Length: 527
Image (cartoon, helix red, strand yellow):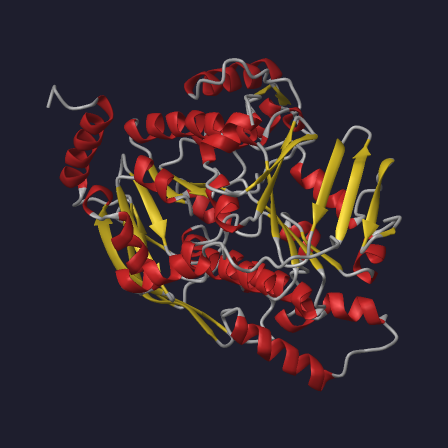
């Protein structure tokens, strides 16, 4: 084994330990069933998690991953089945009971108090006391000790959490779990908003925790990350257990096939169908939108961009480069203080999103929870929201027309469950994203701005959305497509606008362009 690469040796040693420990799982869930009105979210699902492993929970959006996690963390009460932690049967009815049993969760959206300091977040509710008062010297000393365990010595315990990047905030959330000596750490999409260096930093911390004996449940839609980090995986599909596998024994294609229930030939056909059409562009004399020198102080500047009917323009750049800021300017969500916009050759002042909507522009925000969907409304209500806004609230859309539209788009986009009266908050992330897309498709926009439309969703839903983008462009719609995944931008786009340091630096035609070509431009090399 001394001739093997260091990472491979570590993986083999971990697997040996796992096989030795398989008689005593830290968490064992057997025959779990959970149902909601009209939906069987989990049906006889079993799951095991062992000490000192990273266990990936895999499946499409709507497969039941989030529901299983919420059952384990006390958010949902199970209808039937059994949950054991360290051999003791548990009946969690609140998250506090789950936490008391040693289970801690770090979510994609960090659930800490950004207005408090790092040390206050790490020690909140467990501050050492002296003579009835909080021992702030002890709080700081303990926080420094925990941060040092996670290689975060550079973080000032007295600094506000809001001063730090999302990556550091997630590590602080993990530090809180370390401080309470969590036996199980659940990481739900922890890398979706991180760049490559931040992912590497997070993975180093995760491996250290695994090696110290913590059982880690890892949820991610990035297959490369799953294969790099996880030791074992459990696959769910449509609320049922497909199987449990050692990661190194299951190929990527086999995993995808098990996740979506389709064989290799069908997967290859889906991949071809979602690829960029080379024939959809037609000669067009006039662009739908022209932006020249568009900018906003402190946000982004120098945006020169034309988007023609029937083409997909990709917007590429690193996280924080100004992609979302550009999208918001083009939709009127932020008001530009320099430059100009023309729609179909006519100058237009985009004073608000309403002005943009009135001129045929739709915008799917990257933050679907805060800026897109209303969780307490139904699928139907969310889907017809934009159309109702264009008509005015005094002119209600007849229920018959609502039902026809909703039924059409539920079928077209394969929204699950196919229940227009389901609350949107109860849908998986991928199905929520489909509802948001359907909302704008109902209005038949001339230009659809898509900001990270496939972030945090499974490969099946991602493929469906990619196919939809291609279909909409083939029908003559203009698309501005933003994604952190350069491969996806290249797959779908006819032209690529590159943004760097909050300014547009290049525009290239997508003719045999590689990821390396785009990265070279971003890095400042020759175009």
